[in-house]
Amino acid sequence: MTLFKKYIMDFMSIFKDDNTWNEKTIIGFLSFAIMVLVMLADVVSGLLGKDLVINEFIYNSFVLVTLGSFGIAGLEKFASKNEAR
Image (cartoon, rainbow, N blue to C red; front, side, top):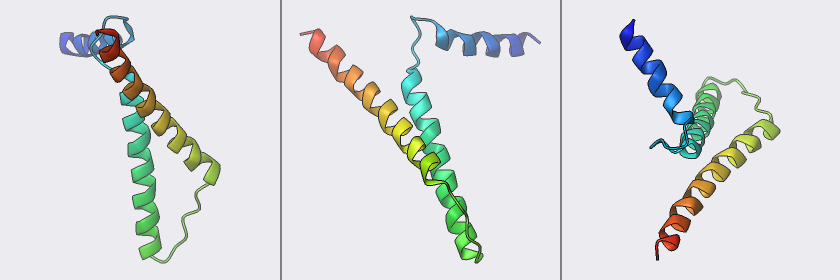
């Protein structure tokens, strides 16, 4: 039970202001992973001769979340270097 409690406390630490995790890159990676899984499912269903219907609005939303997350995280990385000068 203490190991489970340790994992919960480690997870909760990502919501603190002084953590070492970059939440934007985590969300961006998860969004990208979902996009890759959907595209792999589309390829597999195409090979099986079935059409996988993907709503374009939903896919574009994942693209925007991925680009936005990585873009903001990248800007923050370079902005913090420029402030140190």
